[in-house]
Image 1 (cartoon, helix red, strand yellow):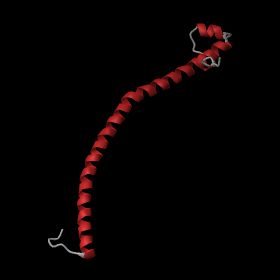
Image 2: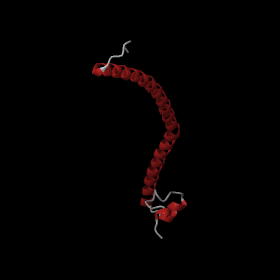
Image 3: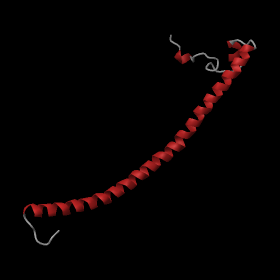
Image 4: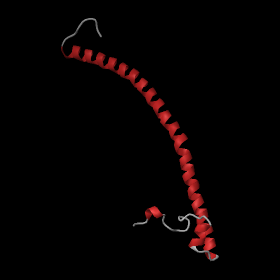
Length: 107
């Protein structure tokens, strides 16, 4: 800012420019601090998600594969003449036999 105060539009624009420059430096400094904090929070959320959600996703995928394998086995056993009662006694889940679970049945 100049040593002498200028008046009029030129003085206003000079003071406004200096003020905007100072505000820009302030925002640059605070923005960097905010970006670092946001980066730390983002890192914590990402790593927590990986640790918590990835095993869950893997387990869901494995469950789907087991159901598909059971369905193939049930299909083969049905071709050999096994009934639904016998398949249930053998321990096959109702989902593998193409039956809806009891919680989905209306009363």
